[in-house]
Amino acid sequence: MPDGTTMSDETTQNETQAVADDDPQAKLREDIIAAVKTCYDPEIPVDIWELGLIYRVDILEDAKVEIDMTLTSPMCPVAGELPAQVQMAVETVDWVKECKVEVVWDPPWRQDMMSEVAQVQLDMF
View 1 (cartoon, rainbow, N blue to C red):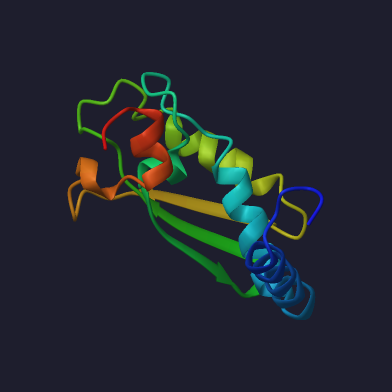
View 2 (cartoon, rainbow, N blue to C red):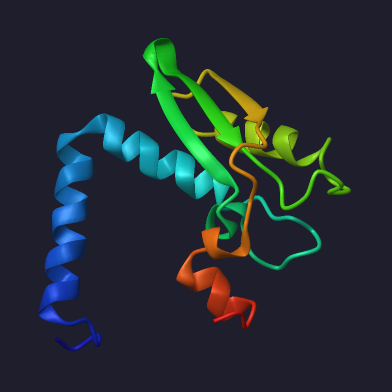
């Protein structure tokens, strides 16, 4: 492979694209997650998806989305702003008419909820 991708990487990418092409809801979910990944806790240089702050993304009828998210701490200084940022980001996705974001505290967020990507970025592996 001239671009450095392996056959299995290429196959996985092609399979993922095929699923997205065949399943509009899967494509919409990918787009919603991409929008969520534009949101950052300003104190941590990792997007909130990789931090593990998003607990639930439901795509409902009539192009409505419901998201449960948490914060790294109940004392988080952006507690009032971050959910609104997530809502606005998701509502920019084509076909999403409305997004409702609810902050939940159960289960409490823990560092082990971060993705490997976040752990590497924050040198916490």
